[in-house]
Structure formats: C-alpha cells, structure tokens
Image 1 (cartoon, rainbow, N blue to C red):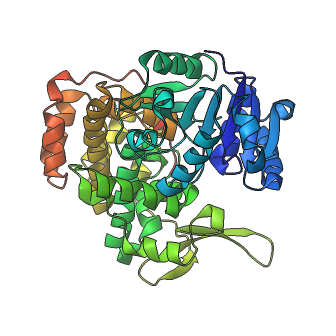
Image 2 (image 1 turned 180 degrees about the vertical axis):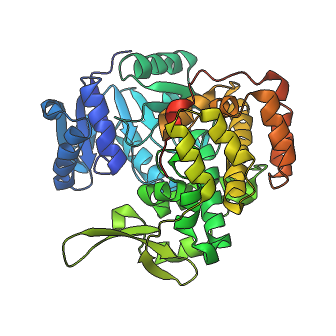
Amino acid sequence: MKIKTVTILGANGTMGSNVSGIFASFGNAKVYMVSRIIEDSFEAKKKAALSVRSEAIQRNLIPKGYEDLSECINESDLIFESVSEDFSVKEKIIQKIKGCLQTEPLIATGSSGLSIQKLSSLLPERLKSRFMGIHFYNPPYNLPACEVIPSEYTDDQVLEATKNYLSGVLFRKVIQVKDSPAFLGNRIGFFFINKAMIFAEKYKAEGGTDYIDAILGPFSGRSMPPLVTSNFVGLDVHKAIVDNVFLNSHDPAIKSFKFPAYGDELIASGCLGRKSGGGLYKTITLENGKKEIHVYDIKDMKYRKRRKYFFPFSEKIVSLLKEGRYSDAIHGMINSDSPEAKICLEFLLEYICYSIYYSVELTGDYHASDDVMATGFNWIPPLALIDAMGGKDLFLDVLNNVQEVDQDLKECFVQLWSNIPSSKFDYRPFLKALN
C-alpha cells in the first residue's frame, strides 16, 4: 500500500496535529491539514512539526479549511478524521466526506473507542470495505502503539495492507482489536484510572487525589500516576471513554467505569485538566515567579497545595529498586500490612486480571495487552508484572489471598490460567526507583 497524500480532518486538535506529523515525517506523505478555520490549520502545522521534532516536514504539511475539502480528499489516498470523540460530531464529518468523494480512498476514524461498525454504517456500500478504525496513542511520536479496528465490512486485503503500512512505514506497534467500547488499551487504562478516581473519593479524608496517586506512583510500574494521566488527557475525554463502556458493555467490572459525581462537577465548571488550566491538578505561579502544583481537594471542594506523602512500604520499594532487588521490592509490597500497600496490591492484581481477560476477549492473543500497555501507556505490561511477582504459581497464591479483588473479575481471569504465557517484555525498566 502506497500512501502519498493524506487528508486529516480536525487537524487543529492535539491528536490531529500530532498524527499529521507522523504521516508527514515517517510516511513522507503530503498532508492536507483541514480545520474549520484555516488559521487554526496554520497553527496546527507548527505544532505538528514540533511534535516530531522536525522543521523539515513543514514542506509536507498544507493547511486547509473545510471549503477546500472536496479538492483535498479527491487527491488523497487516505482520509483520516480526528474530530471530537462524539458520535454526532463524527457523523457530520463522515457525511461531509461522503458528499465530496468521487474516488475510493482508504477512510479511517481516529476514534479512541466509539463503535466502528456504527460509524461504517454511515458510508455507502462501495466505501464500507475501505473503512476502519486506526487509533493512535498520544503523543504518537513517543508512544508507537496503534490499534486497528475493522468493521464486519472491512475488506481483508485492505486491512492487511493497512497494517503493513502502519508497521512497516510509520513504525507503529500494530494491535488488531475487535470493535468493542474503548477497544483494548483505553479499556484497560481507564478501568485502572477511573477506579483510582473512585478511590480518591473513597479516601478523600486521607487526601483523595494526590493520596491515591502517591500510592500508585512510578515504583508500581507507570511513568505517570493514574490521576495525573487523567488530568493530562482531560476529564471530558476520560468521562467520554468510561461512559461509553458503562452504557454500552456488559463488563464484569462495570462498576469501575462509573464516573464520579465530583468529576462531573469539575467538568461543568470548566476544570477539564491541563488543557483548561486546571482539573484534578493545576499549576500555580507564585508572586516570586516559582510554580507550585495544586490539587483539587474532594473533601473541601477547593484547590490546595499538593502534599508529599510518606509511606514506609513505598520508601522500602524504592530503596530496593535502587539496589536492583526487584523481587524483594515487589514482595515487600505483597507482604506489607499497611493500608496503602494493600490498596496498591489490589490495583495491581485487578490490573493483571482485567488486562489479560480483555486481551484474549478482544484479540485472541495473551500478549496483546502487554503490547498496548507498554507501547501505548508506558505502563508495566500485565504479563511482565506476573513475572515480577515470581511467575504464575506464586501470583495465583497472592491473588487467592487478597479478598478485596473483584470476585467476578477473578473468575474470568482464572478460566484462562492454564494458558497464560510469560511476557516478551523485561519488567525491570518499568519499575521506577521513584516515589
């Protein structure tokens, strides 16, 4: 498959501009960056070049407005929509595309979890076979995971050619996923993140948001704590993802996808996260020019300075990780009686169970969740975490001794037990010697 020209709709969005940079740099494609207002496309062009750290690609980036849409898409080999994660918005964009098309290009949605089947139904029969979901992770320059989601109409040869292009030309880690709410990576990631948000409310008297993030810090296998991640992504995006799962699935851990009321209140007040200047966290500039991170206090319903928590279990883990004693560090958490260690262990056990269950459910591949969490979230892969805990048998003993783990989820996981392989990833780089 040769992709020489690409049209990106919604190019002024964060993902739209970043994906434009990927196609223009790795793919050396001419990229029409289409926004509602052409001035936004010119700004997006600058961001696209910065996102891949290459001013040279600007010659491949051509800002356009919607008035130029017909000209752009009929010259393109690929039409990629990257507008808001809202079905009605995407429906309008697909109708625009359909109204302009005289050729039969590859058409893709960058949706992070909406129904590909439902979106494909908006297209005429002749185009349904050339439509699929291509979900990049943000920022795509740093996170190479790419989920490919066909509909029942997608042509098999088109699908394989697209996967080969994404892996061989754009250097993506391609994971083919069934069409299911939030797909695989966001299904796992926001199971964990939304559960953390629920626990922040449950433990609001102990500190809430920054308390839970301190419990699930870099030493537990993720470069960014879960609620910092939500703040980075945006509470509105977070809510859209979990609401989609909550309303449109029969997930065994469905209660973990219920978005908390205090999150709705923050969204209603315009506190979406980093992109709006504040959400669960915000950065304050003091009179002396220094910056200070503040956190939303769920109990008092106002912002306060982020606290530094001291947990003996995490201090011990970090100390052991610095010495390269990974097994001792993990088992120090497992054997600790502190309430914070127990919370951390519950989260990690459920993360493993949930990830591997949905890896098999949505891809038929035990390793898919490892691939998407390592290369899409930069989180410790679940199979690798089993290895870090001493392997399958020791892990099962730990799982059976922790009563707090959701029993329905545990049952789903145990059914797969006999076939679970070792990870292809080394767990050590993911366990950071940092609080």
